[in-house]
Amino acid sequence: MRRETILESFQATGVWPMEPQVILKRFNNNTTRQDRTLGTAKHGDDKAKQLRQSLHSLQVQNELLHHENNGLQSALCVKQNHKKKSYPLDLQQPEEHYGGAVFWSPSKIYDARAREATKQHHAELQQLQ
Picture 1 (cartoon, rainbow, N blue to C red):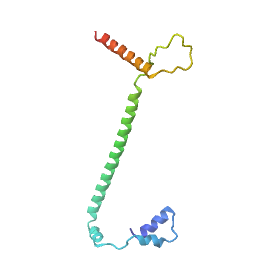
Picture 2: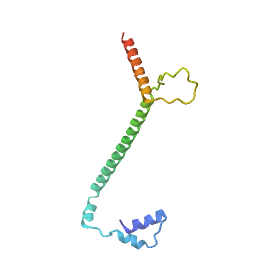
Picture 3: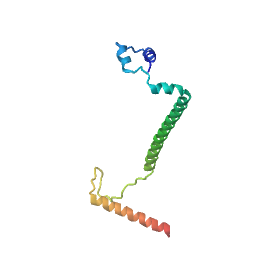
Picture 4: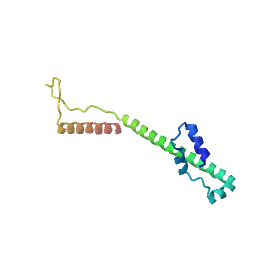
């Protein structure tokens, strides 16, 4: 980086360090031999820069598409999970139940699920006949 560029960046941002020389010393202002040889191949640098920009643009687009795809897949999964119908289990309450809280044992819930499974099985058999 050149000294002028750094000073212009200070001016553009409106941030001036207390000692700009400390920051300017961090950057090597000496051009190396490789930099001088690259200066002769200006046209190649432009093509390389354009290629780098194109590659970066494609990578960003790819990342955005992957992110969008993941979001759409998770939304579809959530939507499909909402389609599952829930139904109350037939827990066969006693005749003398007058309301209030009722606690069911795990065995009663297991029996109710088994009755529901047999009902569904009989319904499937009825449809096949």
